[in-house]
Image (cartoon, rainbow, N blue to C red; front, side, top):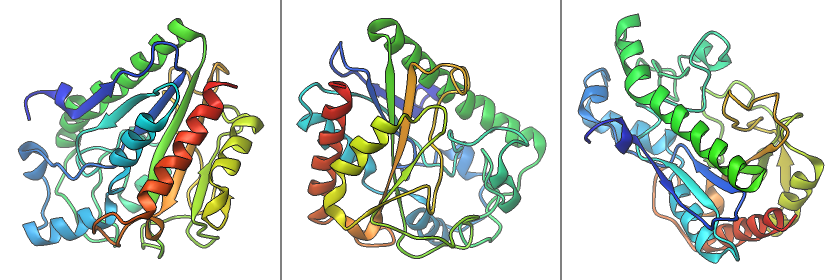
Length: 267
């Protein structure tokens, strides 16, 4: 990998589309500088990547984009979240720091030691990967606002059918599709469109086991032109767990996501 720009990819959509499909956790790629901070051997690292990666979500987003009447934009993380997690707060506001999973992870999904990391090493990872990523995503949102006057961020994730030890709020339901919402940025109409689009999977739930959605901090809590929703697909719906191949369910998920994109584009 050469430079931070290779850490993410903005795929242009239709000029008039307000939709950005954000795919932050699909990659398994860990560049050498980040790998050197991780204490797991190669086999253990592959097992951790099986559990922590939202496998095939970049493909889901790509296939949904291709099916959409007006192609959405896509912002795709090209690196594993074990490098940095761009959806975390980079400071003490992040509650996942309590389990070693702030913007830079120090613990695995099962609570084992992941990396030896001092404050300087953490800052290097934030400066090289986290801040350029979030700046680029902020710029993508700002440019869509300038072009069409509104933005709909659809955050594309997946989650395991069985709770992993790192989950802080995993005691509740684990529906086939979890919809994460934000009181400020998720209008009722957006949530209703998602519930309709994903109605055929055996049920949707809201904010369980994962809550909230991603909005760049520049716009968070102050710009209602930016709406957002997180889509969490339970992995057994479309793939072999923990990190195996996709199955026929992936095509159905992509079709439902395309239906949602079309609904919010025309809203």
